Every structure is written in structure tokens, then in C-alpha cells.
Amino acid sequence: MIKFVLDSASDYFSSGLAERNQKKYEDLNVQVVPLILSTQERTFIDDKKLDVSEMISIMENHKGRSYTACPSMDGWLSAYEGGDEIFVITITSGLSGTYNSAMVAREEYLAEHPEAKIEVFDSLSTGPEMYMIFEKLAEGVEKGLSFEENTKVVREMMPKMQTLFSLKSLHNLAENGRVNKLVASAVGALGLSIIGKASTEGTIEPIGKCRGEKKAVATICAQLEKDGYRGGRVRICHVENPGFGKMMADAILEKYPEADVLYYPARGLCSFYAERGGIILGCE
Ligand code: X90
Image (cartoon, rainbow, N blue to C red; front, side, top):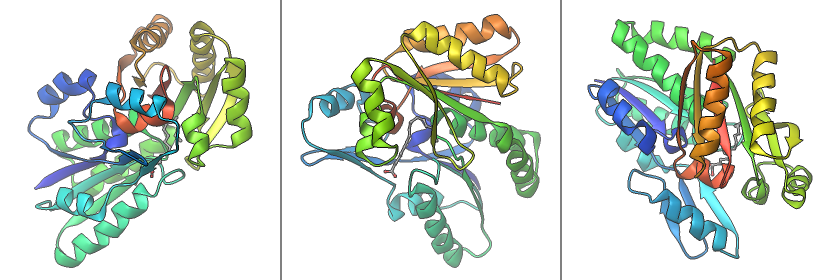
């Protein structure tokens, strides 16, 4: 059996993708392995059942620290179970132990099932880019590519993908040591948004600050152009901000009418780190 295993940073269970996933991928075996979000008092599993809006409010109103953790070994192993050819897509190894844990689980699974094949793709990114890697792999399977051919095609394509974001707060990223505290304080204090991108190492690279969503859209469009985007696939997740998602999507479509653009609400992990109002965009 061919399996696709994604961690929950992929936003696979986004309500905005549900209908599409059901239509396009109902014949595929897709498993989503949850990351875990927590405060001292509560634990949220980022699975299909998580009420993301409620989680965001609770986290925002909570005074103490909050944390995240990568999926458990059991989470990976039960997702791999039954698979002969398994494609795994993880959030960036530059910011999370998730890729590592998927690789450890891979060794364990292969020890039990020496004939199985498991390829773990480190997205060096998060949500939208992870979903796009999944889409490419699914296309390869539909075209009848072998496991190895499909892996090769997607690995060659991955460096051509890019992730950009606009965030209104970097509080949770800074508190969890995922971004420099100085960078973070400059944003919140002045009511600015920070525009940034995923570096080639899969870490957060700020590229500018601006005030207001219109300016953020213009800055991201300019960056896309600069990075060689010419109208391919774009995926955008937003945190409780469909208006911003739509504005971004419309701006891209106006400039590149042929573009294939989707925007949808983020699930738990991306919502926690991108925070209310933020968007993350992946493109090819
Ligand atoms: O292992 C864990 O506990 C999870 C840690 C995840 C850390 C960061 C997630 C970033 C999410 C921020 C904007 C997009 C950044 C681009 C990726 C390099 C969203």
C-alpha cells in the first residue's frame, strides 16, 4: 500500500481544503500525525477534532508560557503501519524536531518491515509548502511514477519552492526560541507586521516591516516577482483572517491570471506560531 504521512503543520485538515481533499485524494491513504500544543494547564492535540479558534483564544488569554512538541514515536509508527511505499512530509528541521522523530520512526519501522520504502521529505518550511509537496507527490502517484521516480521529481522541484509570510506578532515564536527576541519585540511594540521568508536552511528570515495589510500584500508581491515567481501554484494559509488571505490571492491573480491560488484557514500548529491575523504563503 502507498501511504502519505504528513505532520499537522501541513494544515491538511483545514476546513478550506476538506472538500478538495475529499474529491481529489479520496482514493489515497493520507495520514496526518499531530504536533502537540500546551500550556501548564492544558494540552491541545493538533488533530482533526481540534477547535482551532478556541485554542487560539485560550492561548492568547493565557498568562503563563505555552509550548509545542513534535509528534510522538507512536504517532509516526501507527501512521506508517501497513505501508509498503510511504511518503512522509515534515515541517522544517530548522525549527522543529519533527523531521528527526519521523526519521527515527522510519528506522524502527524498516527494522520490522525490511521490504518497505519510506522517504521523508524535510519541507524546510511549513503549512502551504508542505501541502504543495504533498500535491506533487500525489500527482506523481496518479501519473503512475515509481516510488523512486516520484521522489526524484519532487526533490528536484523542492528548491524552486518558496515560503513568505506576514505576521502581526512574533511573540510565540520568540517565547519558544524560534526567532530572535530583538526581531520579535520590534514588531509588536510598534504595531507593525513583519514580512519574512523561509531561509534555505528552513529558518525564519525577516525581510521587512510594514504597517497594514495592503502594504504587506504589495511587499509580498514584489518579493515574489524578485524571487522569480511567474504565475505557478500558490497556497496561502491564514490565521482567522480570510480577508487578508483573499486580498493576497486576488493581488496575485490580478498580476498572474493563470496562477493556481488557494487560501484557507491554518490548523493548530501554524495558527499558534503565525498568530492571529497572520498569513503564510507557499509558491513554486
Ligand atoms: O517541534 C515543535 O515543537 C514545533 C516547532 C515549530 C516552530 C515554528 C513553526 C513556524 C510556523 C511561522 C511563519 C512561517 C515560517 C517559515 C518556515 C521556515 C509559522
